[in-house]
Length: 257
Image 1 (cartoon, rainbow, N blue to C red):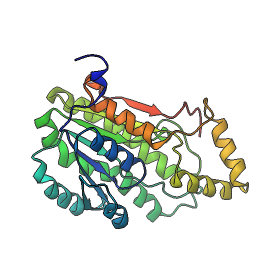
Image 2 (image 1 turned 135 degrees about the vertical axis):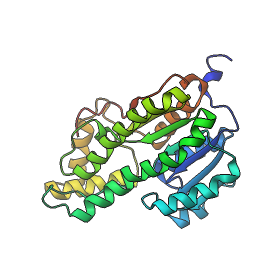
Image 3 (image 1 turned 180 degrees about the vertical axis):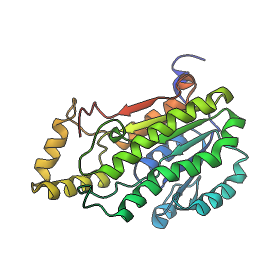
Image 4 (image 1 turned 120 degrees about the vertical axis):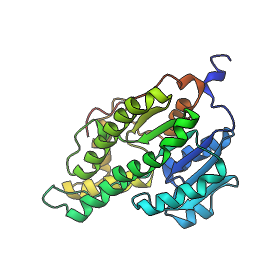
């Protein structure tokens, strides 16, 4: 195998992507599908599920509900195992001071972003150990930086990094690799809403808030969902076979939030 060949995943991988019908998750699912993988996604958006390309299977499921995760893994039995699991499901959570955020908002963010990853990882353990596979947990640059007015989100993402590094130690002897991808400011509807919310909280305009965000990035640009998908593919390729326990920022170097 040449170095160039080692950068492409082997065809036939069995891949699960949570929240894989929209946004970053869909870009990851599509990229694996185009590489020749057998891809199954879950999502809550039934319209997005219906619009998935032929060849990508799906389950309607909320990963914060353990019974839904059980049903998802029942649906996956046709694959006969798993080689790659991408724990992508997450929400932005509320924007506000810690004294303004409700207990329900806090719990909902942690339930989806962190507890959902635990449920999926727990159910994936035996399959990934059998295949000596790969778990990718989607975190955020907010998992390495403080994020004012977004404490539930940041707390959940720091938790994901801790989950990742701990599972890498736990599963490494069985040949399973566990890594986290930390996207920066990813172009798309979610970041547009975050910018709107933070601008309103600060009492400034959208353009001013966006410019302020970009000024905190060394390369002064957002990243694309396809950039995150490319990192996921590399981790699943032979060239990524010795990358484990890492929190990999794909962010154009976000210096602060």
